[in-house]
Image 1: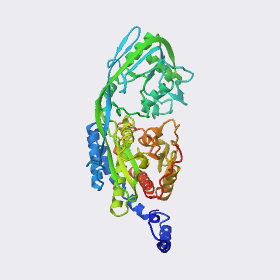
Image 2 (image 1 turned 180 degrees about the vertical axis):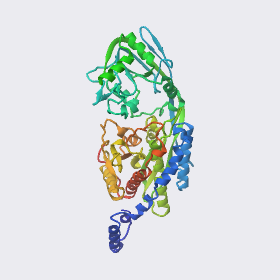
Image 3 (image 1 turned 30 degrees about the vertical axis):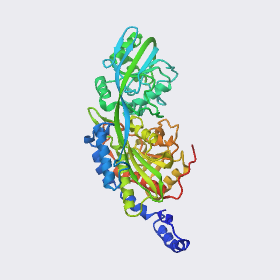
Image 4 (image 1 turned 120 degrees about the horizontal axis):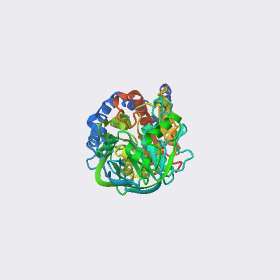
Length: 529
């Protein structure tokens, strides 16, 4: 507790102890000082900030685009208004150099046809060109491996060109076979899940039939949706399109490929799946030569840093992070109110609270770095750059508390909404998990859900946000998260759907945890490596 860290003589301690004991007993063991500053983190202020950065004016905060630059300026302005000085050279920004990749050309050649890039197919942006030769075409339904519906069961696709449908299978009543209802599953929401599954089964190439092909092509070819990488840096986060070519193709191209392989037409195959309510596979020998080429150019983005210097332990650093980039725009704006506007405005509010505490003589013993990251949606790029080019030595960094999506409620908790997922808190330092639980039990009373707190969790959430780049450097981390929802990575992730009082409580939990870690006598002990 804050009061127990005051340095006193033995005599003063003995005189003060009864008063301290009575105060703690009266407050139920709570520290009124930290409660005072936690109360500065408010749902009202969060809504004010989020209504700005998650507005159409900020154009979805796409990395290296004008909306992202505008958001960076807004965050820096807030830090300045709290009296937090620029971290170095009069700037709040750490430059992050990037290489942007754009699909440029390609071809698919079979014995009877040559298909054209743009007209017949395109491919998602990738960091390298792909060239693959296959000798078998497999129609594999929807490319799903799920207990409710498994296209891969008893099927070997190793080295083969796999042709699948976008979306997910439905029965003749329009219900999804996986959920048994109209509600979409993750297989519908996240195309990358199918790509990952094809890679897992060693497919030689993946061809995905997309509806509204022209619209999808315009979206993928727009500047707002290019792939990016940090130049000359090793990135441990898997690039989902690495090595295996992934093509998005027209229905016409799919039908021509099936016809050339003397297979059933696409529409009848899909109808058969719908009627049988189970997978349908077809194979044919067919030589395919697949070429997908990308080109790159240099761009720049920024991490935004607010540094609050500590007192007697200022050489040690508590880092609190959230990414402020999102998906940008095409025909619609992806405002990303939850992902990760919620984390971004939480950082702003935490910075305000700690800065006010310092102004009033209650500043942290350890220094605190409030950092909003760029390029998370492109592959954790801002945090990759920071941990490779740290402004403050990594060996002085005590922990990273990462906030990514804390403004919504997932379907799992529809009946009991007072929760937050916590991931990674005990993986490197058992003390961090204990501190977070203690602060929660004392102050916020959330249900801490650990169902995703596993390195082998199929969703791989531990690897999918900026904390991971700290964790892989042996720094204790805790990732605060509300889980995915139907608006995840969609244009419908808007401010009006945020649960601000719940978001306030979740951000306050991060505050209490950071306060304790920043002020305790001992640095967190590393218990696992």
